[in-house]
Length: 173
Image (cartoon, rainbow, N blue to C red; front, side):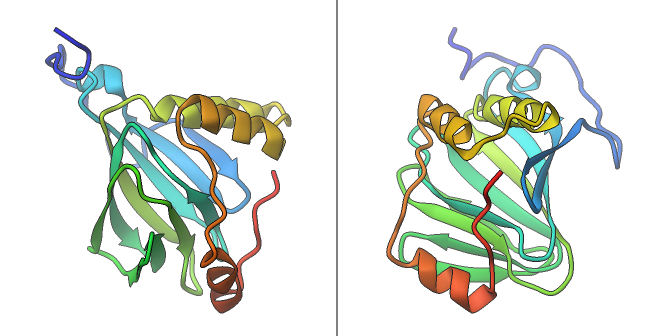
């Protein structure tokens, strides 16, 4: 049985406020909730807090789909030519193979849950958090890691417009 089809072997409970926390890039954090090991490889769940102006630059997943659920604030999403700003309770599916970005589209901090399927990509987050904690999170290292996880960064022509409209700054960890 492959990891993607294995059954979870134990119950995992994550209480509100629990989970290892870290910074992915300036203005965007991660809180680990459910790892691939907890779900038999089927999925992972993380929470992302976004500070005002927080931005996840355009990238494309080649191995996983993502479902995002906004908990607080307003988060903008762009996937190829589809753009939307969602408030609390809004859901979006970002399918693999599409260039997408996310940002805090409002004037208050925002939070969202991200469900990653299949699991595995959360390990990239874990590695980046480790680099950040050690003060070694240069963009070149993050780009190299992203490529290793088959999540290369992209530079779509719509990105400059999003930056300007939402007054965002490109992260330079």
